[in-house]
Length: 489
Image (cartoon, rainbow, N blue to C red; front, side, top):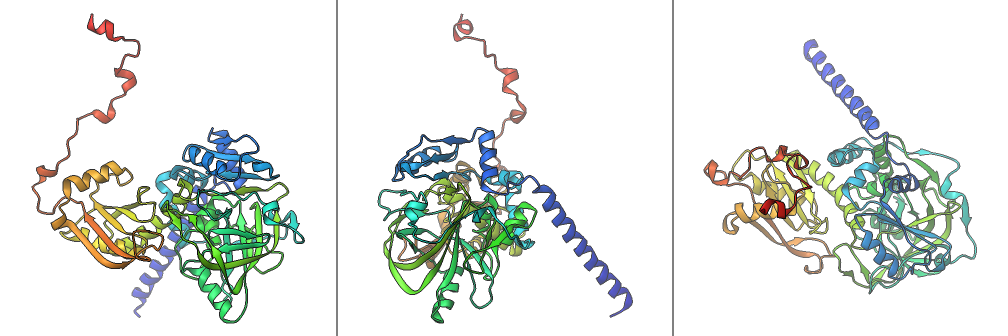
């Protein structure tokens, strides 16, 4: 290679390294106000009038979930001693997008960008010897129902469920950890039923089971907002999501080794349930109220045998009510970040994406496109449908449409879309098995090109506007003291 070309290549590589270092420093600086555990975030909610405290003795069966749902999106709720249990339950911690951003110390418009950066530049956890989550250890003669205040949420749920537990497992071949949230049915004094969908936890369990071994697991309850968000990242197998949690907060996450396995868990969490997914054992689990706001059916599913529970001295039990805003947003926002990054690789004109609440933050994707070529919106639809198998309907709109406002998106479909010209349909496609309208996940995916037609006359689709409307200060122009009678006299 000629010397000049070599020097140029070296300079480019050095520039890339400098940019990476600068970006990482910027991430750390912006996230310096992140809340690093559940308690500090609860304190912030309390200080800002977003925390309600229920009267003691709230019934763990239905009443607790009902109160949490009534407060959903407005206030988090603390339930001291529900049903006379000595423990305390919290719910609704992250039921607004703005709260999730605030918990990470950033503005809402930086949320997807922050998550993408954390996926690209994770920070390896740092291990500590002593941790708050291991202040108290229960190993002998305990019953999970006596130890933990586990609620029953929806009318036809098969029983009490752990719904906000981060299930941590490790690849038995490589040792790499995985973090995920699985619904966990209280099936016995020291037994949990687990729904394992075809993802990394199931792959690890299949590998252990093939060798005739149980798979060690740790279920972390009462984790930080960053850990909850990171658990939902769509990343390759053997990618430890705890590294994403650290990057979201701008500092490596402190972890501690479990008492009975090599698994590492967030040190400042509230509760850790240690156990094993039992090889070749299945038992009835479900029904359970899921995110589509229908019930996941009953079936024979995996079983966790619990060996011990470690906790803080007075632990808080976090529960996520099935189908509530916290449930939807925790799954939706990490998906948005991954989908946006995936689509931009082929379509740089994609400005933003949004998994709408009406589409249970999984099935309906709205895409804002800076369109350059005729037909590009249809290619974007195909890319969106391929970005995640859960996506069922895609609406692509122009830059002037607010994709976070369902009325704006519906308006674009109403005024810019014609089915015979702008619809894309793909029957016989893999979708979500929790969508009751599918045949065990097999269904039809549909795309709506709601962008202005490429050859349309400019004035035909010009939006109406009143000049200067946005700049009007109503406090300056309206008279609060005036009365109708005075005006009419």
